[in-house]
Length: 369
Image (cartoon, rainbow, N blue to C red; front, side):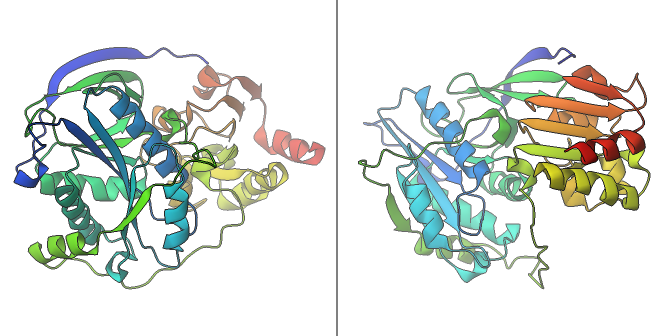
C-alpha cells in the first residue's frame, strides 16, 4: 500500500494524577493493577474487550512491578446473559479477576451512570490503569471517567512502547505521535485512562483447559457508594429500538463492502452494496458522504469519526478515498477499490484497483460470484 507515515515524539505531554488516597500502592510491595472495562454485549465477550485485555497484558509486561493483575469489569446490559459473559472472561488468559456490576441501573449504558461506577471500582480495588477498546461505548464513557479521576485521557493507542510510552495516530492517521506519560501520580506510577485501537492488538486467547479460571467478584457495594456521592444523572433512558442484525458486525467482520458518494442515492446503495455483501457474506460500511446524503444509517460509517475496521478484505466501491475515511480502514489486510476516476486517492492505498464505471462493474461482479 502506498503513502508514508511520519512519526513525531512528544515528551511529558500527559501528566495524569490520582488524588484518592485509596489508590496509593503499598510502600513495601510495588504492585500494578489494570482495569479493563468490558464493552456491554449480549452473551459473548466483545472482540474489542478481548483486544483490550491483550493490550493490558502488553502494558504489564513492560512494568517491573512485583505484583501484577488484570481485572475485567462487566456491566449488565439489556437482554444480556451477564453470567455467560463472565464465564468467558474468567477463561481468558491473563485475566486475574472478573468484576461484575450486576445492577439494573447499568442496563441501558448511560455514561452518567457508568462513569462514577467505574471510578468507584478503581478506588475500591486500587487500579492504576483503566483500559478499554476504542469504540462508541468507550468514547462516551472513558473521558468522563478521566474527568472524575482528574487525569488526562489518552485515546486510540496503537502501540505500547514501554510502561509509560505509547504511540497514537494524529492528523487522521497520517502521522504517529509517541507520547510519554509523566510519573507525577501518587506513588511510583501514574493513574492513567486510555482507549486502545482494537485493530492494532490481537485478541486475548482462552486459557489452557487444565488452567483454573479467574476469580469472579460482585462489586455492588463499591458501585453503590460511588453513585451516592454523585448528583443525579442529567439524562435518563426512555426507550430503545434495536435493529435486527442479519449480517456480520462491522468492527469484527472478515470482509467489508463499503459504498461512497459515487453510488449517488440510497436505491443504488441497496441494489449494489447490499447485494454484493450478501453474495460475499460481508458486513456493510459507508463513507461519511454516503451517510450524510441519507444512503444508509450512520452506524455504518467507517472513518475517523466512525468505526475503525481492519478486515481481511475491504472492498471500496465509489469511494474517493478522503483522508478521514482512510483513517478508518487503511489497516485492512487487502483493499480492493472500484472507481471510475484513475486519480482517486483510494488507489494509493489499494492492493487491487479497477478503474471502471461501478454501475457496470458491480452488477457483473455480483453475477459472477
